[in-house]
Image (cartoon, rainbow over all chains, first blue to last red; front, side, top):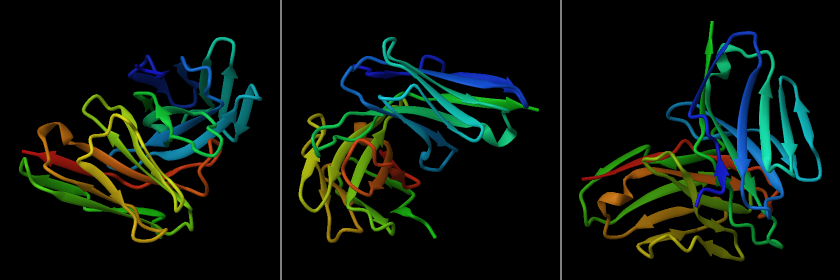
Length: 115
Length: 114
């Protein structure tokens, strides 16, 4: 039962261009969404998040868009840089009145930035 | 300064053994977690724990048990290891238990059961 889906296992983008990573979810109880970046042999590191009450959040080169009606979010990276090459995980969580049960992750998208 | 650390980084062991993975966080967080990343690359929550409550993912076998000697540590004990336990295990922590609290992850422990 995959509640968070990242349908593109990999994405190749030229340096300087825009990278767009997509994520879909099925559980309407999710109210907070996050993107994590992961390099090989390291743990995921937090990148950016968005609450379900917003439709956009921006932090430098990174922007996350949320379309609640479509249960879809996307991460835009502009401009893409070589150091952005990593696996990007989409994650979601739901408020459980103080008893959150952790993040639900997608399978990740391997972003490759080509020089 | 490593915020969330795990030891060992690699663990190779035989089926049937009992092993532990240690996790420490120096962020002063109240909540810690264990995640498992299986061969299909899914990261799945196993436990979340703070000094008040342990929440266990119902799919986790009772051979797995978290032990917290203090707020900064959450160790993972695994009894009677099975081949299917081979995976990368990530520890994480957050300030509080809540959907908006950012979780910080350790580097992972790759467990191989032979």
